[in-house]
Amino acid sequence: MKFGLNQESRERVEPQPGLLAICPLCESELVAKCGDINVHHWAHKRQHSCDHWWEIETEWHRKWKNRFPKDWQEVIKLDEFTGEKHIADIFNAQLDLVIEFQNSPIDIREIQSREGFFKRMIWVVNAEKFQLSTFTLDKWNADIFRRIKPQIKESILGSNEQGGNRLTTSLEMFHKQLEYYQDKNQTEAFEESYIQYKWSNRKKVWDIANAPVFLDLGDEIVLIKSDFIAKRIPLERLMKKYAE
Image (cartoon, rainbow, N blue to C red; front, top):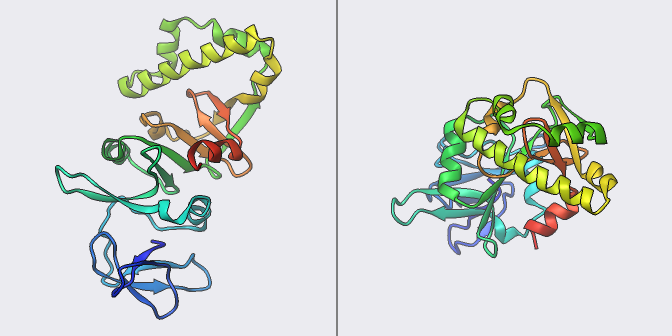
């Protein structure tokens, strides 16, 4: 946790050696963890976490959070009907959009729970260790891909109804964009944007997500469009869309 609350002023404070604070979610005591190895953070004094969706914060998390204004970071979201509360990594109030940064493995139920709770959201996933290889989508493969019949698409995408529906929709959008680039005679621009990828030991849990899933590969960011097609998203474009 990057921010705790000052015990007297209730202002948000970052961890400093010897400083105490309270948790903005459960109001229990926090202690500052400011070692030389792990990222400086707040931890609950009594060794518990009040938000079971929260994962140990890494330098990767902190790097992404720091790309956004401080008052967008670690925002408490409340369900007024149930009283359930969770901390969103980033909340863009203007877009009414939550951005969740995911570094560790996550199960299907948690993906569904977070998406159901936050409603409008996107995922940014640390994929540097995912053994994902990307390839330029050449004209021949793009043409073959465009001609795949719907019933063949279904068998390729698998039998999972929720994931399959999402991927089929993505494929339809892919076709529309492909036709647009071909009509405008901008095939090269299309090839620079869309890529094929091969994902060894594929994390199939992300096929279940309904919210957009951006994979941070370290040297580039890609948006999953199907189980073998992705779209390159320059960091500058991503930030312009979600951080301005």
